[in-house]
Picture 1: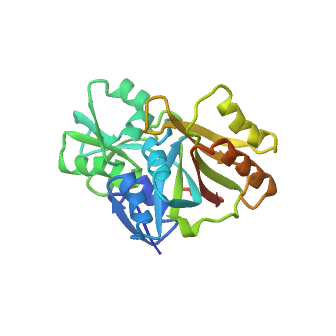
Picture 2: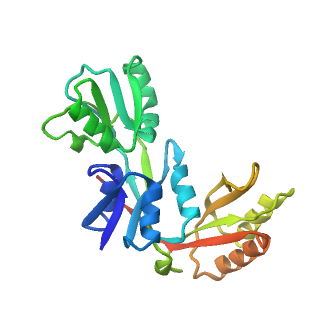
Picture 3: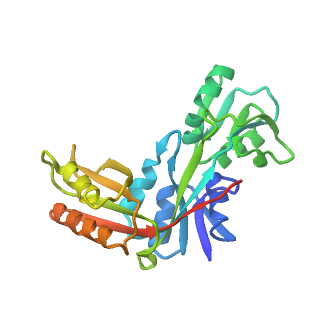
Length: 268
């Protein structure tokens, strides 16, 4: 099986994808990864969906909501950030915007004058550091190789830093088995108590929601869809009942059921 994820080689997404497939290809954006799975170019894609410090990856939420794909597994892995450079003398710190944000306090305290440059991935930042002695990258310590120094390790603002990745597949790979389910709900409505109705569909059946998040629908200002993660499998009667009620609430819109899956913890 071949998987596609954020490149180039050496990203945290790449590390997560290696738990799914030995053969890993790369794209430069989450949207292109999801599209490559939706159009059948790849059997699996691995995208970051949520970080314990910076929260949800909105590009991933939007790409999954707008594509005909399924979620077949989630991978949770700790994130260890290191500052990598040719020497301690640099003017720019380049990395993915999430990594820069996850190390904000460290950078402000130790390199307040450094320019922060957001690039497509942590690996791209490390590539910049290899090519330019005035640039430092943020990435896993193993990415230093033989030509970069590890200026500092574990520079993330919280030691509990971890990222949740979704393993996505085509719609045909959707499963009802698993301890967790994800769905996207677009009610195409706006009235007092709408969100409460959606929540009650799960609460009344003793289903815990581990995440609910609104995103703009893109149709008009103030119009939203909801990403929901529930701690129950689609095979369960209570989850089937909740889904039926939610579909009734969203009768003017739509509900995209992404599937049920289990969680895998991968340590690096």
